[in-house]
Image 1 (tube, rainbow, N blue to C red):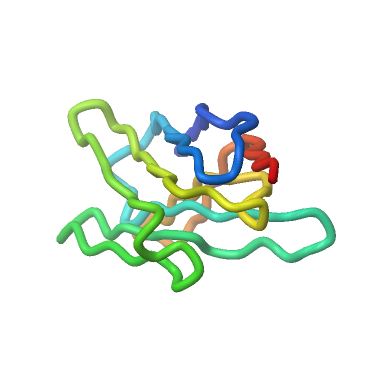
Image 2 (cartoon, rainbow, N blue to C red):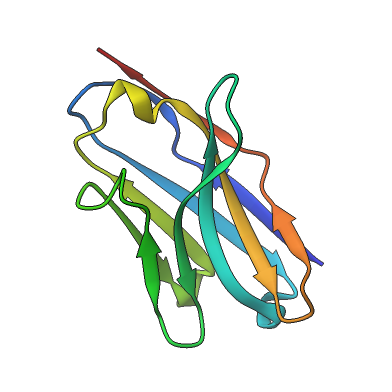
Length: 117
């Protein structure tokens, strides 16, 4: 089992920045990749950024490329999402995800990010 706890959401004006954190615990060594997803009201959950733990490969979707950065602190078992130049369309609940080598998926509880115009 893997437990994920997000923090760092909040209300920010357009153009501002936030940093989300996701602390992982439990069977850490089973985690293959971690990522951030978001779900806006009335929309499906979508991937924002993903990182593969074994080789540090990272991917961000085009809509946030150049504005959001995914990173990890392995010593703290924590993943981050640095969000700069935030736009109102970035408003959503952001979820942390961990995928394991045995194809299990774990989710955090979500953290609300609201960007005002």
